[in-house]
Length: 321
Image (cartoon, rainbow, N blue to C red):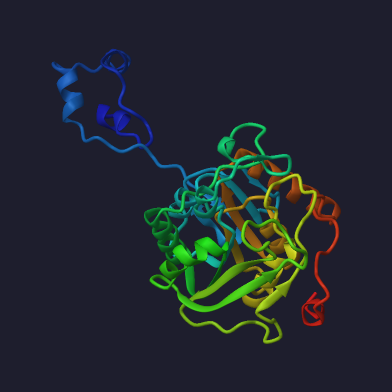
């Protein structure tokens, strides 16, 4: 066997000169200048390990999931949204549904400290009620949109939730990447906090890559669904909001993706609608919360963090469930 065949093994670094001499001694070979010979050998890049996720979809990624169900229908990653998306192959996702933790409005409001929401300046720290947010600079947001477009299959949909400030500042950027079809309104049924008029709604921007009709023509553009109260995770969204997105745009076994997983409501919605799911969050609290939630729901068919329906009194919406 030639010494080159031993050294040029994919996935291994070349040995140190000392080890090289040991190999030569064992093999009984004599090379006049072995160190020079090492430098002459072609350097081979280490083998890049791949992980195959979502069973028969076999989506190839370079990072191991933080959590994966036994049947590999759900995969959760502990990662930054943009880094996560960049690791996914082109045209591998059927539907994107997501609620980014926008920093724009919160950083421009004079948020102090309260018993309900805690101290904003301590966001992301252990024990803090505020979590680390996605810094929605134009550069970051453009990258998020472009990567979402790349991984989304042709003739598919994307739903992005917005607060009122981010819709004004970042919403127009979506038009540069996707075809905007409508702006949906989530009516929370009960009044909330607010500095100038108390909030009772959020927006959902509905767009497409290519052309695709909705699965149902009975879904209105205002969704009356009660907010989640007494949640163990801040900003937890009702599962029904994500279910409406999925009911409008997905088929059985579609791969649903949420790059801003948060409390994991989108994953529960995907499971309930017989879809596969892949998502990520940069917060360790979020991925652990979602992991527990998914595990318990699949074991008991009861959502431990939203056991009851939050649908309002809209007759049209109730007929869809």
